[in-house]
Length: 353
Ligand code: 1CP
Image (cartoon, rainbow, N blue to C red; front, top):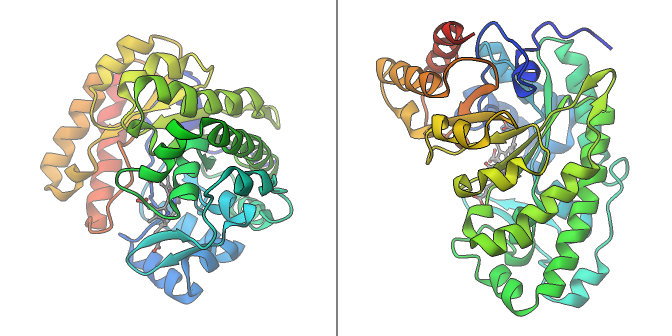
């Protein structure tokens, strides 16, 4: 395999010394970039884009052509796994993701099988292989998955949701059914992530976007427990290098200690906590990724630089910080502001290493 020319991102996740703080942006390949919108139009639909390895590779690399980012992230979606389970994923314009066959009962859940990552999901592995070849060692490639709980919210609701009425109804009224679904998802995800790693993903991130909707007790029982199963089952070393695992629960700042106890390598932080406080609480156990409010990117370059400086200073001296937003970049951001952020992190980050 090709030597990595820039391994700052992997080194920071493992708390090894770096020359400056690495940075990437959640949803860095996306609708705020005109070149993304052009490729997506050529592909036809969002899923056609995900299923075409050459086009998925093209959009993965687009942000790297513009900005000095320290990592690439596979262009795909968390909902590929439920789609491969037979739920029939489609994206209706302006409405987000939808499933033709949502899961409503124990009988529905019993019928669900574990997808073969080199079968129904082979298009994802083909994208990983193509991207690794085209990256040619420039920066590492991040593979990812949704958390079992987050995937279950879409599978039971049938779409995005504001109050999670159906899935939480199942949680309280039929926990056995929900546990069976979460367990099948965890088993599927372990195979899926391990296949991504075998295909060339060099780090793995678990997006628990909706974990923050749970109570402290139900978070542990229905979200964290299944992320623990994944951390225990995922390949942690490949091709002579550690494969760091990042857990991100949006709205999960109150659970950083139990998240760190899973044995993952890093925690993603949203913007609702000071990164200095997060660092104090987790100590040396994990690295931290985050955590600028995505809305700062609506401000002027000077303000963006100030916020970058504040977050870098808040983390303080030493390795173990990967700069990122606290959640995905919005579609109406001016792309030039992303360049301001990335350059500010590299320039102002040096003094902390
Ligand atoms: O019209 C379009 O072009 C679709 C917009 C879009 C994009 C760019 C969707 C639909 N997915 C993606 C790509 C995507 N999704 C990536 C690509 C890599 C990158 O970061 O550059 C990743 C990592 C995801 C992960 C994802 N999909 C998450 C977890 C991360 C997060 O943002 O919280 C979630 C919740 C989804 C579901 C999903 N897919 C798409 C949309 C619009 C949504 C969110 C729907 C909702 O709010 O419920």
